[in-house]
Image (cartoon, rainbow, N blue to C red; front, side, top):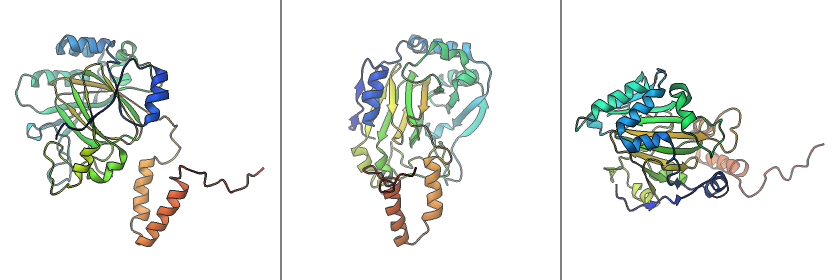
Length: 313
């Protein structure tokens, strides 16, 4: 993948007011440069990888967490197996310390399996970490999660919520696309994916131009964020992001939250799946009619469809 894409804008000396009044309303990715430089975890990472390993192990309470391992021939790319009947990794429940010990062993070899602890709730497995590595931008009820691994590639996917991702150790590259690029990213099955939401089928390092010809159009509007320890990336909801970690020990802490409280019942993504089941099989004329109704009642951003209805006492 060529590195000629637009760079994500960097922001310095960010506080809560700047974050909420200027960064979030733009609905664009943003790098909060060096925002977590003061974290003890970041300082340990900049000392030596082993210093960070020791620091994290000190907090490990022995709770098992989700981890995956991909064979060396997969080059760290989290994906499907050859016929897309399953995935190309093994999943296990192990402790944070076990993951760190595996990474330390594999760091001695030129090629090794890719290992990743994914989305572990920090309060459940490393509770003391939270008291020393705090975030002032969000409400304290937002529960951070930790990601630990070696060189891993997570294909382009989206989150339904807002996301702040803080690099503690290693270098990461996020390649981001606005939501409307969905048709140019060639998304896999919506109800069967190796990540919580569907992923792009395109191998960004070796795109099959015959199979995915419109991927070039997506690259024209891509934004790239190259992050180092202490940097934090804001990802707006529904922005596609392809994530690469490059080092033998990569640690990231992220925060997911909803700016607008989630409604009761189905999530928007679940509504999408249900709409596919109930509308997609209809004749073209009826699908177009439902499109008009949804556009008026659900996606109308210029007027209130209920405005003509008299208010009731």
